[in-house]
Length: 488
Image (cartoon, rainbow, N blue to C red; front, top):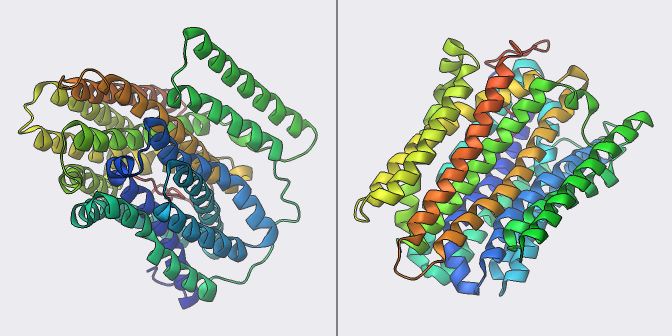
């Protein structure tokens, strides 16, 4: 654990690590079981997108109100309630008989995971100070990498060993024992609930408008518009809701109320650009893995176990690169993020070329190579970028900076998990026997490369702002992102 910390603090950290592993392994395992689940319950492409993207959407939207309610009512009660709901929703999803039940359960489970993780972040901030906080968050990140790496092989083994019908259901139940153990440890070891704020001042209207804007952005990709005019209407609705959100935030500040997005964060150009980089990278990586899973199993007919084997080099590459990224940061500084994004673009384009040109016999091996490259790229990008983002968070908004960053990433993931698979499914639904699944995967990979290219441009713009402003007691080596990402 953390040397020098007392036993109570180490126990609190263990509970936080268990909560992070429980909620992250659930998503990683599900992705590998999506094709089996789709065939078992007769889910449409739109249903699958809601099942996968809905979890991230609900997770992201629950972070800010969860943190605010934790400040107002104490974190332990909300942690226990959120984990209990997460457990019950997981059992409901695993035993559900139709897409509607599964979608509702995953939405509830995502919201519960968001509430739990907002309490985890707040608890670590409450219990640890200075370098100890950085080390605690660093262990949290390592736990995330291990959970994400274990998810695909575990899911593949379950589907291969138990069969498609029982396999995907057991994948959804895999997090249940972890949740039960986490509940028991939390009830015993988490500190007693205490209020850290007199008035949460939750921006309910702002959160509602933001949710409506995100859903409006997702719908055209889940439900293909009947005409170009309908697509324009959806686009206009997104712009209108975005404008309403911006105006509402400004009015709330003028009235002396706490907005959903702290004005100090919105006015920090490096923070905004870094958050946009994280959104593009996070959404692209999750969507790319989901498309890869569907392509290998539905498009090429590979087993779930072999699919997991193809994705495993990516998880290993990310874990190793994340552990070594700090050395590169010491040598070249923020250019580490640029290198990682450029490598990610190369990996996505290589995946597209491989899908179009490589014979089927050796295609899994070639894709495993591109996954290794993609994993290394993610390891060089995620932690250094998020560290730099939090370094630029103004001191008066340091507490909410991590929460807003996570919420933005989860919303980006929800949109990308709807849009990018829609590109693949549209291209792969051509005449039987053709090369359409390969074409679909290539197109989807190019879309992911485009998202990373946008992130690369934003990263270059951010570098022009000069070195980050460090808060007292924070160093680049000790500051770790407050929430790990679901890479697999």
